[in-house]
Length: 188
Image (cartoon, rainbow, N blue to C red; front, side, top):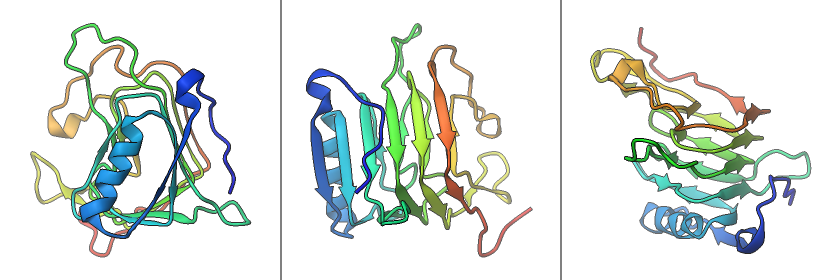
């Protein structure tokens, strides 16, 4: 198992391993509980996030998947809607958001985007595989299906979103991800 990640300090450096059950009734809750602790979370096996399961990130966390001997992700998360999401804070002058690392996970069949980080003080997204992203109807143009691999930031013009200064700060590194957004029945 390759465990390359940005080190966290102090109590946050603990490792919590979570085994996927391929069951949305338990997988989302188990992943959320681990991520809520912060630190390093090792996801093992196959997870099912159902149609719209989502894990909310509010603390510094390294979310890692297992890899095979070639370094390809062995951990899979099926489905979900923003499988990993760091929502905006409601504070006008936000304090720095969480430091977030997501590495070595195969996201398959997410709705709209498997990773949506709107609030962070450093982001590393690397070594992931993203396939089968299901288009989501655009809020103002439902005939168009939107799909993304990774969204970082606050502005989604197609949904009337507003830019929030200071919501994403620090280094943002997105590298070595395999993203295939081909869809069964693409629209315009």
